[in-house]
Image (cartoon, rainbow, N blue to C red; front, side):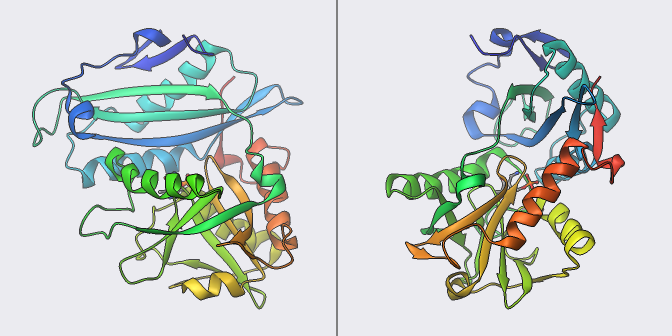
Length: 303
Ligand code: PMP
């Protein structure tokens, strides 16, 4: 049983408990799936649920499938309809987090299809660390390099690397984990990208640092330029720069924009969410909910 009634599986809305695959399916055996996490934001005034940046998520979803040599799955139009249909079927009038997965349904390790499509959506509010700030540990796990597994895409198996790092951090009493890459430079958090503010400059690891090609990261770069007049510098980031930064935050679809207030128990800035981070949190919040009606093409209405 779940808190929602319906899921979507292979073209059909099904009862949550019926969204099943066989234990011998390659997705269960080898993690042969790729996925997207998409958020929906309820706007009470407009009585509307807005799904954020669906087109960009579906573009990355297609890219992930290509990189993993999956057969062609359903079209983006069909998948957009599936998202909307599922949210309508569940009658959501709250913020939600959606997971859409393309997975290999039968065969062995080298199978490239048949491709299944599963979509689930659950109510999800914002994490407490957005208001309070997060404590971060620099992981002793390394972000896997691109010639081991491509971090720039969202394939299920990549998340074993993330899981080991975040579990280590949480067992050691931290909220979150930052992973360095094989060159010792900052890559990303377990499921978020990282930004720092140093001497008034917004900096984030460049796309060749074994990071996911994150949609929130791209959104932050655009909003920082537009609303704060800040150009983001995309470059290598050293571990010690994290300690010296005035502000640090991580961002992602689920984590939104979360201030970091300590790293390896060393205080970041004055130990409070900084003004640039707070400005970005407020701007992002207004855009995703449609309270600020700019960037209308980023929001797909459900109702
Ligand atoms: N890195 C990883 C490993 C992630 O799983 C995520 C979450 N999708 C992110 C970064 C942030 O990506 P996005 O902004 O597209 O959600």
